[in-house]
Structure formats: structure tokens, C-alpha cells
Image (cartoon, rainbow, N blue to C red; front, side, top):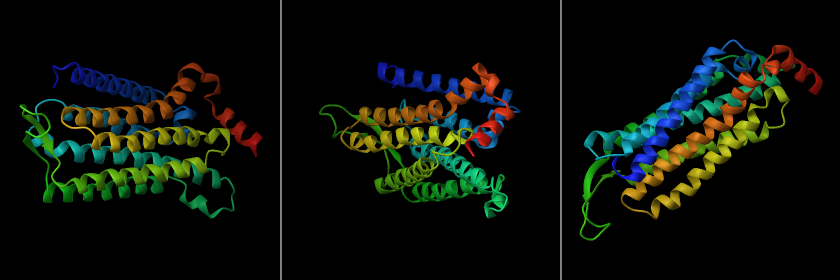
Length: 274
């Protein structure tokens, strides 16, 4: 509950991370015409930051007295929003690879440079998760129930996920996208310095995958409010990993190193590395 120290602390962390994400979004919007923002696909960056804000806000539905509405929307909403975030990262990574490969005028990938491929990746990957969540809600929607099994002499009001296998399908698909993003980013980590976003994506997806791999045994071994706390912690920590590892290096250059936030510097890196 919001009155308990654990619930209050998790809510405070979620709100702080949301404010930090909104601040980074405002920085990117304010400096949208600088080379650093342009070179890293600012449209996907805006979308990723907005979905991260929604991810942090999703944790608020896990705190407090469960109702039919919060039980029904909290897991699908979290899964769908996080899937959009991971799809944006996958699209950004593939965009980096295509942009580097298309430097050669004779490369056939030049025709794929532009917003079409990343937009298609984000929409397609998100639609698959939307289908999974829609099937879950329409067939076996989560609902509040009185749990008398966890603790003797206590009634715990909690959300029943309906059909647990659909929850793990949602989580598994999200993990599948994260692993694909990690593999692509890992293979692209040795690209020239101006395209080094793949390095930060590699670290962020490593953190993301590690958090959710450790989440499953922890989730299955806990009960009651601690099960909810484990999931909130996993959402906040993985979202914070994506936020800080991908965007803090860019904010550092934008705010503190404007001397290297120039087109000439980026072009110079490409030239020297070639």
C-alpha cells in the first residue's frame, strides 16, 4: 500500500525516474537540431523516452488496493509499453547498422536508409504483443481475489493473473526482442565512433536481460505483496538501465561537451576511421 514504507519508497523512485526521463526528453527537444540528436534518430529517441515515462507510471497501478480495472490493465499495459521501448531500441540498432553499411554508394542498403524500416519494426513488434495481450484480456482477464493461503490468519487482496501461461508468453516475447536487440547491438559494437550508440545499447540490453532473468525465479519464490514488490523493482531497475546507459552519455555531450557536438567532428571520426 501507499502507507507502507516499501510501497511509498517504490512510488517515490518511480516518480523520480519519471521526472528525470521528462527532463532528458526536454533536453533532447530543446537541442533537437544538434548533430548528436539528429545522428541518433531523434524520432525514435522521443518515442523511447515517452514509453519509458509510461513504464515508470505503470508501476503505480501495482501499488494500492487491487480493483477490477487495475488488475485487468496493469500487466498488459506494462508488457505493451515495455515492448514498444524494446522495439525502439531494436529499430535504433538496426538503423545504426544500415546507416554504416550504406556509406558505400554501391551498397544496396542505401535504399533502406530513412524512417520506413525503423517505423515498421516498432509497429510490427508492438502489434504482436498487442495481439498477445488482447487474447489474454478477452479470454482469461486478471481479476482481484482474496488470498487466504499465503499467510495463516490473514486475507491478502491481490490480483490473479487469470491464465499464468499468457503472462509468461507476454514476458517471453519481450525477452525475445531484448535478446535480439542485444545480439545485433553486440555485433555492431565495433562500428566507428560516430555510430557508437550500439555500444551503449549493448550494455543497456545486458542489464535489461539480466534483470528479467533474475526476476523469474525471484517472482516464483515470493508470495503476497513481496511478489508485487519484486515485479515493481524489476520494472524500475530495467527501465532505469535503459534510460541512463543510453541517454546519459548523449546528455553529457549535449550539455557539457558542445565542442564535439558538431557535424564536422562526427564526419571527421568517420573519415579517420575509414
